[in-house]
Image 1 (cartoon, rainbow, N blue to C red):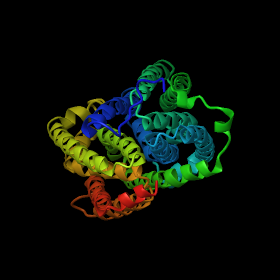
Image 2 (cartoon, rainbow, N blue to C red; image 1 turned 180 degrees about the horizontal axis):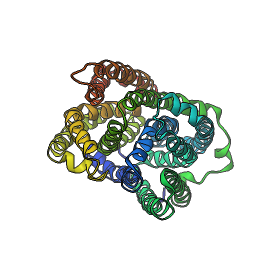
Image 3 (cartoon, rainbow, N blue to C red; image 1 turned 90 degrees about the vertical axis):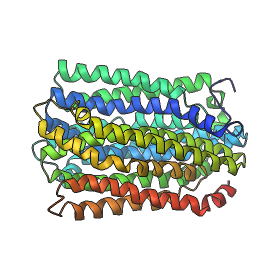
Length: 451
């Protein structure tokens, strides 16, 4: 192997490996979220609050359509990490080759569905007529970028599987700079509105995908494949779908529940919808340390399962839990003290009601951040062990909680639209309880023995 960024996490300090692996992931994910943040700020300040609501109305749908490629990438990364941990280069190369067949075909299907059915889907969600046309245009354009997201996610997952979390960071920084620059050019100078924001995003994603492929081929010997490696291996493809599909379905189920919640939000008018969009963008940022830690823990777990070192997995879980607790406490204090100022970044001061709603909403959800983090940590260990089937139970929990709580709490007169954000916190809590219970049951140990 000629890439010095590759790391064997089956030896050495678990805490050091996880932290060292997490930091580049976190920086990269924060840059990735910059896409959404800049989109929202540019639209809210240079187009209108209604346009911001139009972009927000597509948030859950985008997550639904992007979740297939990201879920499959998780499955592929698990297989690759376990082969890397077991020092099986031949199978690792076959995994890399077949991942492209899996991801490209899935991305094509999802893109066609999104482009063809954007209108009926958004109208079914009761998107207000004031901005439904903008929502449709934004969603159709972003769907054209799914292939770029799928390829980048695949390459990034494979690099993480061999212990390289740094390189994907550089691609995301590059694409973030492109995204921010094109946002300003398309919206301010060419007056393209929400379509300009969507175009900026898909161009940036395409650049990340192309650069990541070129780098992997030139710098990582595992990606230089021979004729035997590139032959479709239907057993490998089946395994990729077997491990990745539950995660993709889980993400899809979560997205469906978020879409159902978005329909409830839309019923309370543009101000509440805009506030919900703002808090959603902020909480996407909050989730990045949890998500980055989870990705690190999945790769760490996969390698150690491949090397048959289960006790290192347990130690990694404990260290990650303490990290989540510390971060959650910091975020709780920040949003209680500075929530209004943070929400004010997204819209002009004239939209004072939106800022007030957003700041109060953050005070409702921030006490639940530790529960949110404890969804990611046990789920990462379970995924790394190959227990991805649990993802379906996990996803169902979120669906039931989000739909039931939203429809019950928002109908209580004293709560009204505040029930939207209470629903979010309670959903995180119940889902975390289910995830931790699954980990503590020890079933992941038996799953690990199968690999």
